[in-house]
Image (tube, rainbow, N blue to C red):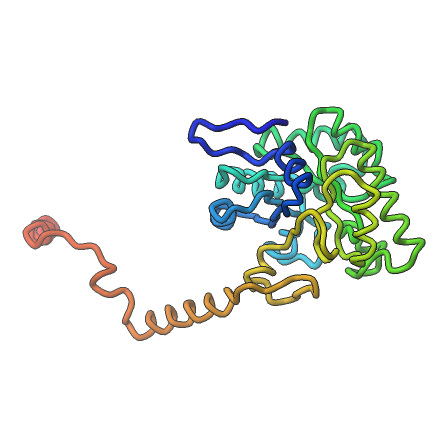
Length: 289
């Protein structure tokens, strides 16, 4: 992929730009988004890469894990995010069982993200065990973002959401997973919930960009937007920094609205429509006739 100016002069972030940023030591800002309004804000604020994560299963749909999320749900949300953006690269997160069943299924489902939702690439979880699947996706001409460390779709195997790679053997597996993704042709890798020292080894061993979430300093960072703005109160990971308390603001607004409705203070005259008095008289006359 190359950087190509749009007719409106805005350049879409692409792989070549991400590689250039890595070479210059410039950090990449990534965020999740699941809908048009948040994606519009993120794009306007200069977020480089937006991931439409299957984490929406938890933050938006209320599931306990990401596993119930379907392809149709992911495509719907990804399309909404793409329509909101002009500059950010949008990556669709391939949900559970959309790529694990066969390489053919993986390519077909990855292709749907580009054809039906307009995404600029896809993300899959895993390393060594998905190497051939990842290679098939890349060979089909689809940009691939990898994901190692804590991979939420494997939460049942992990026994929960916890730090990965805390001993040398497990850390070595993470490095091997990352190398397998490089070999398959991934353009970058997300490292989630691993010790910062292991991330530094990844940066030494892997030539492509490493973007972290709970992984210390690397080529860029990604967070879940609901964690960042304080909108998801049920759980805040240690690695997430809460930059705002949107939930409290929304609660205050909703309570004020409900109180105004009950008191008859809303809607006020300024919120109502009206017709001319002569038209009102005509209406009453028509109803009497």
